[in-house]
Image (cartoon, one colour):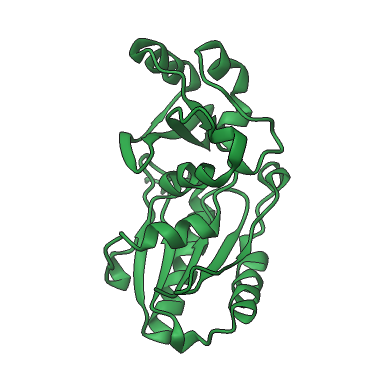
Length: 231
């Protein structure tokens, strides 16, 4: 399957084109990008065009467009999903929503030493307000469905279940001390394991169900920071 995959759940923009022969053409953001201001509006489409050009495919040759639907940063998700929906409508290519947390966890599998012990992966995206979006994965299995929690509550859950997961993502970096005290392992801040990769979005799309354009929406989990004014 020939897939374009994008994700904007964090401050970084990720894109990849995966060809049917398994070749991947990817713009993978540096882990340092997670701590910088987001620039999805200016970064995402150039990354998409670059991946497509390097793959040698035309828009009409794609079988699917896959997009990370979160949970994650509200503005970033809106930009990424709106872009994916617009491209799917313009090209008449099917659209496949993918969990950004699942893609974050899946990206660890190809990173060598960080997966030598095969411990479960705790994917954490910074939710702001002193919280994280979290999900626990053991290989292809989702052990904990996505939820939002304060790091202290997450640490209590880790200790209560007696697990020692590998915690990855910008949320893991931000709350490293709390997580490590609870028994989790956190790779160094510059590790590639903390980035949601477009390649992982593409690979997960193979088992994701296609959805209508109107049905592909951000998975916020909690209410947005901005609330409408009341009289």
